[in-house]
Image (cartoon, rainbow, N blue to C red; front, side):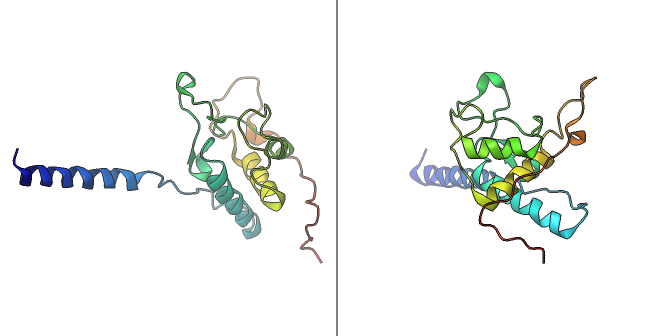
Length: 162
């Protein structure tokens, strides 16, 4: 192969590689727009954006465009977190506990990966949208029908009510 042909081949391979790389990570936050109020929609959007930024490397949740969980248990990496598309996470206080304490095992998830109001937003978002793609099982309550619960007020946060 001549040096000119080799150069052209390298350029073509480089261009293809660049296209493949730029196509990665293009999933978007997909919080349903049918929320009851604009205020709740913006809270969900904030929780989804924070989840996408801080949690998507290890966890999957389609509503946040996150695909971090392993797809096959035999191929899981040690950092593959639970797939929240199929795992129910209710009530929200459980999610907040996991955020504050590094998950439930404390093995890989860092403690306080988000804190304060952001931790509350992520906990509410995960509790709201997790488990929506779980297979239906007779005799069990679907995740969406379980109570969300409430979260404690964040210390030092000011209330927006007058």
